[in-house]
Image 1 (cartoon, helix red, strand yellow):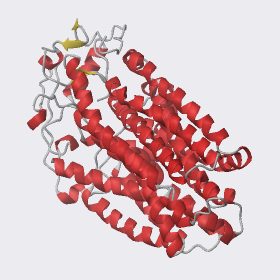
Image 2 (cartoon, helix red, strand yellow):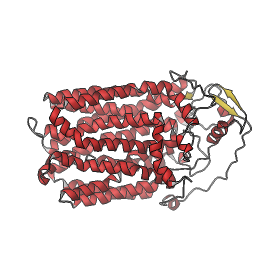
Image 3 (cartoon, rainbow, N blue to C red):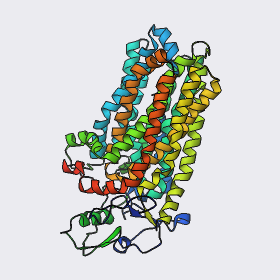
Length: 546
């Protein structure tokens, strides 16, 4: 047992996701696979995945190039996922009066956007699998720009609805594939920080955009929300075209090949040595090292095919990946808890624009400062703690890393349930507006300790199907958001805030409690899945993980 993670019982000699990450005791796996080490303070860390000798391998990019690409994609997430979603939240009351529609109808504008985001996810996932992520990101940014242009000239409810639908095409990539890019370009010991950055972007920045949107609506009118977003999107598309090469890479990793060889006992004799193994007499041909691509070659829209799998099969893969119970758990816990935070955003204008609070659109927007601060503190804390804690646990485990170590910090996710109780009770009893805002901020603080660790766990434990996991997460989450747009406002109006938010709080506590089950039994399940991979059984090739 490694620090509470139960050992597997299968005859499998190596469980994908379990790797030797820190030097210490002799590990047979690295007798057969020459290790590469980090530099500086990470000189004793074994680089996982093992980078190839190809200069075009994203793992071999200069660090500044990795960071630049990630930052441009983060900027795209800010615009396409974080700004477009809550763009009209602070303006719900204003739009309701202008179009002479109930607030529920205005909320549905965002609901349809989320519905399109969820429905388009499987197609974008298949395209990214087959042709790479770069064309998907470019399409998504352009779709967002087109939808925003429509919104900037809209003067009717139906035209604004059309704008939101087109914008919805941009959400899936910038909510899901950005996480898989972290796995493409960063090593295991670096991923925690960058998944926390992504989590911060997708949760906290949406609150900051609500603050800005409320002020713009109050001072200039809601059309200027789209005008300003147009300019920002144009700039992001230029950066995307010039400085974000394709990150998908067909990795002929010797370690992965030896995992595959060891999976079939007839291919090569193997010696079991604890939880690590030695594969004998496995011959692996070394390919010629390609030339480094030129700048123009890197900027190509398409870089060939990355998969021989049937396109229709790739489309259904996000649904099939839910047969993996650990992946399904990741999808449900992150999607559900995030949806509860969004449910608060749906009712903010409804609760605090009428008496007794009488907040203006700008003031409603300012309420998002609370969750922005809470989420920012949470994301920084997760980013600073997760990787060092994981390395420390790995060293305590004799240098062997288990993806379940990422889940330790999820204990702070219990704050989500507690804060939702507080939000419901204070809102029902017309409590202090600052205390209510603090509870909303505490919700996002706790959410940060769920999204970052669980996302990194998915990348490390099931890297070969991470595209499908994150796309399925976007589908699940956005369909939930869409459903909420039909009943959360009415439920809050008829039963008061306590009923919905006590319900959400209780569900949150229950979901976070299941983390202990995944932590203890996760390795056994990874072993089981490796020999019962449903995606491979339907013809979708996945590599073993990290």
